[in-house]
Length: 222
Image 1 (cartoon, rainbow, N blue to C red):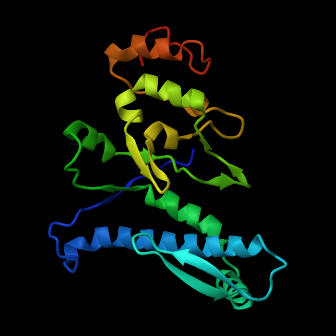
Image 2 (tube, one colour; image 1 turned 120 degrees about the vertical axis):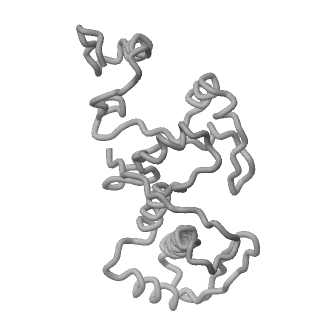
Image 3 (cartoon, rainbow, N blue to C red; image 1 turned 90 degrees about the horizontal axis):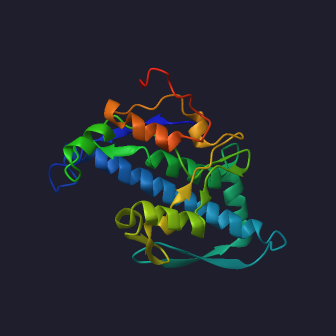
């Protein structure tokens, strides 16, 4: 499933960004800037690709978050510049997704927010990348209203909490993505081993009963 081990980045111990102990945090922030830069290139390229017959004139592009600024670009020169910058490289829209997926593999080495048990497991974590496509096929999809309702039934406090988006605050369940599987297999069919405490075995088999993906061991062992 393409899972990757998480990169652990120490958090800065001082507020001074010039200190060497801020190196890890600075690298992550600069990777975010690189992702946004590629995102801007992809957006400009998409605007030009949507109007292939427009070869002259100028068009406006607004960039920035807290203090957005609008730039007027020449159509012909921008087309030439994008062709030059992207020549022989992965297209910018694909690079944007790649950087987004890579940034999802970072985690603080010194977790001061979560409980010790959760931090222990997260510091041994492998993550499945999201927001990518294989041969033009998106691997993940948005949640349906039915799935949103099921998520809220499972844990309303977690999936119902506020989640900020560029278009406003929504519930976390509404912004979640579903990983239905790949190559004709559901995610659960790709699982080869489930490790649980012995006292949880009965509940485990109850959950998996009817899925047809695991054979219940005769000994009752995991």
